[in-house]
Image (cartoon, rainbow, N blue to C red):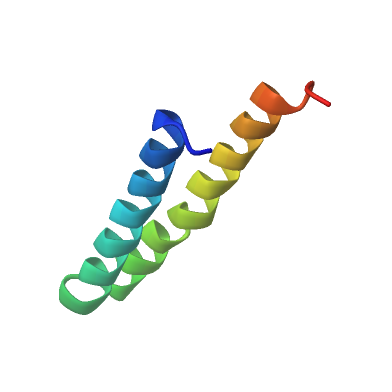
Length: 58
């Protein structure tokens, strides 16, 4: 069901979320917010690429 690229996308989103939380509590809240908006973007690109890859199949 999930292939290697799906795991890569999920791992990238998880790393982004962890980095966002770390930045929020340690360095700068604005930097944490900036990195935090990467998570839905990464997941959106992953969904887009999956639709492109499997969209033709019925």
